[in-house]
Image (tube, rainbow, N blue to C red; front, top):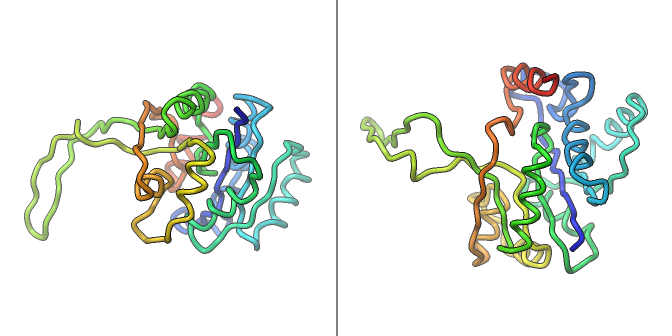
Length: 222
């Protein structure tokens, strides 16, 4: 089955206190987004990559490709006003009706090729494969001025890639957009599909804050 990857890169640098959109911040000699794309290329050069960017950042990406002599072939899709719309625009760039598609955050550059490979292999069997990790710390649920301990073993932290049968996820994204649909698994679930989780990696961090940049640089250099 053909393997596709939609890399969604629409975040801003607000929590970074940085005017540069976070996917373009340089870490260990390359913009974060290039590290992320390279992770999929390391898994397989046959994966067809669709890069979803905000319309006002297409020229920035082109300039960075020239600056870093970056020649990995990608198909560009224009992002929408929400992640839901951006993913749907990315899916529209895939003309095939059969295959597997991994949907991944542009600011998760530390995803390993073993995680990527597992997501495709499991999605081929179960129709979905969503990376997740167990909680390390105790958690409590809060309700106004009261709190209550809950069993952390009942919960998972959800990551990307979130990989699906192509026809299934395309059809799922035909549903009406709602604010509660915060990731692709929630879209597929709302459309009536069962979601299969697999073990992700604690190294597969989403770069969101300045502290994450320090961690990412250390792990990339390692």
